[in-house]
Image 1 (cartoon, helix red, strand yellow):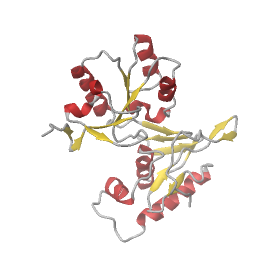
Image 2 (cartoon, rainbow, N blue to C red):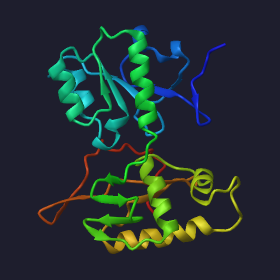
Image 3 (cartoon, rainbow, N blue to C red):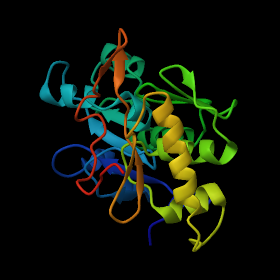
Image 4 (cartoon, rainbow, N blue to C red):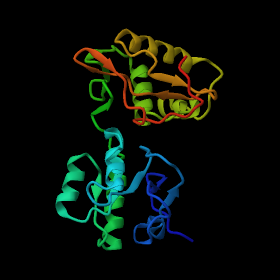
Length: 244
């Protein structure tokens, strides 16, 4: 039986963003990790991605990852120290070469998995910035004047920006309840939160899925006062999402 890594009640998990199978030298399943089958990065677990040589398609693919998720990504195949330094300066959580020993690689992966669980003071999604210490959010530099529950909702959605979050998860993480109540408390708070976002020019950034999930989408960037749409691939959304 696999000796699964467990800390604080959660298994170490990872995703593979490369083509084909996970290279055996970097397959963390051999150390008891769980591989998540997914095609995009997530803030819930670390991501393995191959860089290739600078200028190659693989290198460009790695650099195309949104800045908001790079700290969760462990880049393999960075052959030289300057390449690894460039990736670290670009915000990636870790970068290693193919010659790294399996034990060291697993230790670096475990360290990254633990670091990703630390809460940053500031969280940014496009031009929306959240300040955990002040319990406030700012859209295009303007304060939203959130109450504690509204901030908690927005922070939880920002934790998985671009990904739907279920009502069950919101109830557990924001309300600290183990079941979904019959009341429309989530809808009421979400409506107020949307109005405050609209007031600072960020209407439509919270989308709703058919199943009642919610998703924080990257707001428009403003360059010289002019709104500029975020890149289409910055946070891929599922087709079922539609703004209310």
